[in-house]
Length: 441
RNA sequence: UCCUCAGUAGCUCAAUGGCAGAGCAUCCGGCUGUUAACCGGAGGGUUGUAGGUUCGAGUCCUACCUGAGGAGCCA
Image (cartoon, rainbow, N blue to C red; front, top):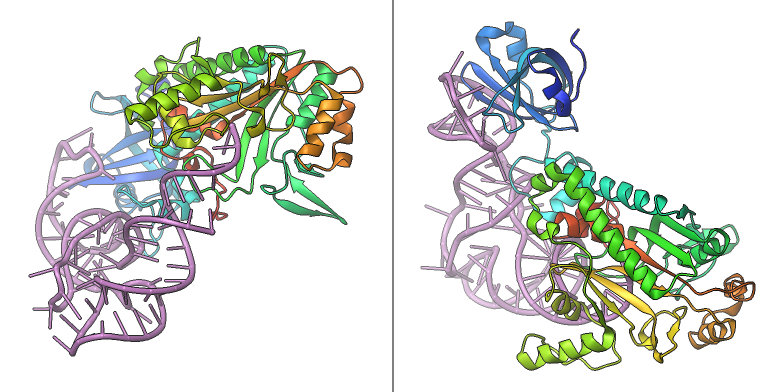
């Protein structure tokens, strides 16, 4: 194997030259004395061509006997060919079988269809499928793009703790862990800590895992998921709505630019993504209620919606289906939202908050708000919600020592990836999803 | 926690209450341009578990287990 090592992605730079590729056998077709092995190496796929007359017998036999996902190092000459999906084929000259998969225990994931349970049980192997690899590349791109977005706008990355002493919003959905002689919990949001770092650094954000022990079994839920959370000192609700709008358009644009090939492999309808441009429609909760009641009158909504309740999933799906870009709904009733949200001074019964609903039925991908300014009111809300005051002493301090209006939001990475990739379920957006009933592999 | 659906070969699925089947995968053979290649052949089964109805149950009934989708809750 004296030829230079390259990746399949870069074979176009070596047209007409001999190269070495290190990867796995994806599939093998044969037609008599002509073999067509397809190799993959993590960067792409390329079909090899092996005429029996062109190679030593031991090379022909070695390839002919390869089994799916056997690891191989192949040497051959790159040749542009119109028949090849990637534009190039490899005229194989030599092969080194690194490890041959035994035929007595063949690779379980064939190229045919499989069921969800089987694929999830073999998630560690399923990741090798081209579509799954493309989804993970888009995920990586979205994470990189989100970090670039905030870094370039003067936000400082501040990592909140993952082990926390108490609940942000109640203990019912927290995973408890033993912390020496104390009870600790896995974080369900870094927000409260980000409010503290925002008071120190002005504009901050975090990117990290969060954990929620919700017994939800839907296509939108994981028990372990990753969030991007910005927090802005002196920021208002309008500021975070504009920020959320800018972030989402930036993410979509970046994926269209840099992950076009992967989105095609995934089968995404790119026209729908190309429509994602600012401004996004913004409606108040009051307007949403009116639209839902109108929809009910027309028979398009199943249940009559009354002012005061939180929007359910079917309600959100109906509302977002009216638009071809993300929908922002703001100023929900304070009673259905978290204790730390600032009441609207014009209308104290509603909170200065916003939910951003992705189009095509993907639901809420961003939730944000202006945070409470007043120490007295925050203390009262903590009591109203039955939360332990001692645990929030440090949080209350933020309202005693130079309190300022401030705002932020959280975006679930997996829901954003599912939307941008057009996936049926968030379980495919993370290498090893953690769900109700799924802790393996 | 609740509602709905499903569980048959390694995988994806058939089978009117009446002999357990096909495709793919694996193995053997054929084919010099195949695109989830194709053609011929072989092996491969405690029909999720436990009961029940019946001359006879993969099929009907009960309970349980597992999975999927949804509600609630949420990003």
